[in-house]
Length: 319
Image (tube, rainbow, N blue to C red):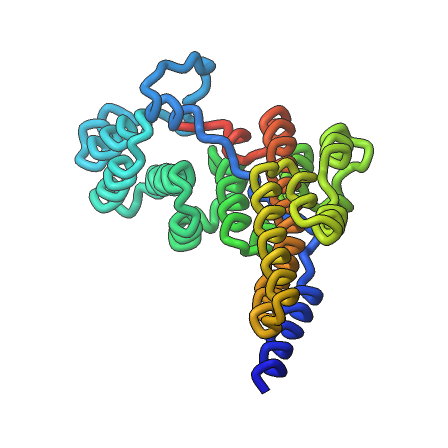
């Protein structure tokens, strides 16, 4: 009875190992580079940015606006924003909105946009969406000085939050305003999703990745033929040696128990070896998948930064 129970355990381990499949489609995490002002603040270094880097599309405050309570708050908030102290800047923008008369529609939209931009640069995408959708920014048109930048930060925020339908709607508005910009955003979306059907097969980015990528199936087959060989194939040599030694130890122990007539211990040891064996096969496949994802991200980082595909790099105005 005990032998039947142990045999059943061994069969379950073997069957579960055989049915596990590692997906071939990679899931890379292509992240946007930090904003130049963020680098400047965190590293406390002076960056030689273009003179028009922070040129505002809005008209300067008049002397009367500068001396108003909301104007003072707005000026202080802008000083914090220029230093990339976004938390204090957002607080200042909201204080300015509280003090601003409701009939100052243009200035109110300007401050609301500054709030949304600060949230966006701080990667608070939910707050960006709320700030735009709950204010007058939701109804602005091309006459709004920062209209193109507003579309960019709203599109990227929808993309980051997985709101595909909203993002596609904004992309159509961007395409109507700037088709080249829309094409770059479409390319970025394909790169982020590793959509090789949309990416050009002859592009150096795709060709370079395909030439260096590891085969998940080959890694699994190698590890099935010789435990540890699949890990060696993807460059994890220390893991490969460990896997080979562990499997050899369990197999040797099982053979020793069977030769000495201890069948129950041999079956139990062999069942444990089955877990290591099939776990190593799936592990080698996952290792190849992670290797491909890291390789893909390294190529994607080069092309996205070279072509300035990220919305944060397309903004015409910053603090």
